[in-house]
Length: 258
Image (cartoon, rainbow, N blue to C red; front, side, top):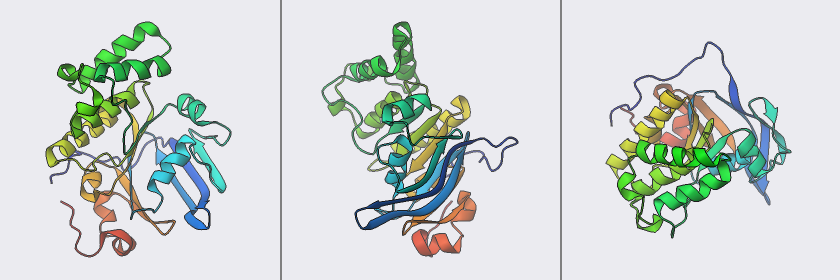
């Protein structure tokens, strides 16, 4: 697959950290999921997370949104510690949008009514709701699907809808949990282009976790590999695939990129 991104952000004149994990550890019972991990996501980056099943990628999203709390360590968003903010206040105050791996919409509501229902929660200005809904329907080319119930949409159409729902509140940070799973090649390419356009046109900071390594690496600026509760490697895609720790923990010797 050709590289989706025409450029990758490798450095910033003024580096502003959006999300920071400091010495974060988390366990489920006796099972250690994250073991004293540290990383930063910078403003304007598309940041990727890779690793085997159960390594803690989705858990990191849950920690960012406040669905779970760490056993120890500090999580900061835009420089502020977020431990005392519950889910709704955290996502609202720091403008974090989340696209879950499964679901994320109402099956028995039409595409338009899905957007209308969520807009009533996240947009206070009643007059702006319809404007924002119409903008997103047009942006994602969903006009001919407005009256179709969510459960009857195709896989790619559902992903577009959930993305539109997450973007209703004009987030500064967008979390994408396995966006490429179970999609055909053309739909994946469409989503990659949408993700890159969101960065370039809307300056949204995006964090993606997925098992589709090539598809993720094609659209991120930097990525990290998680294994056994640790971050074993972090770099640009071109360098990461040659990193010996990344090969040993995840890619193997035969993985090819580009």
